[in-house]
Length: 107
Image (tube, rainbow, N blue to C red; front, side, top):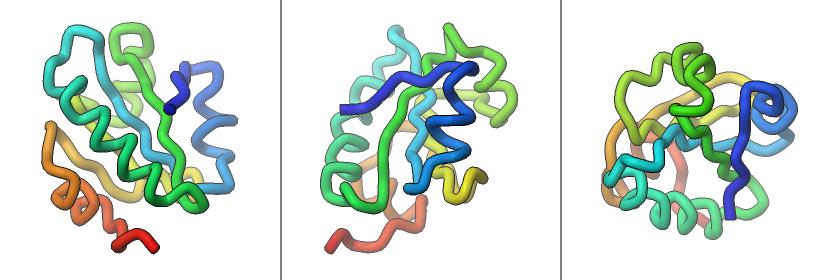
């Protein structure tokens, strides 16, 4: 469903993406991260033409987490045109995530 990205692939996968990209900063040991993952999958499934989802494991990619100011996880950052445009911190219900990220109701 989602692709893992690393410091090496972040530029191509996120910054240069034609679509908006949801970047899920997570870790294997993080319970709330696992809870929010299916919610993020659902959000992207409903918007296949406008949105894609990638995951960044903060244990493996500490430099990326620091670059984007990720202090706690899960943190989800929406990138549009290569720039972070909105973020959600913590596991939240689908509607709250969509509102926080400025995503309209899917077509």
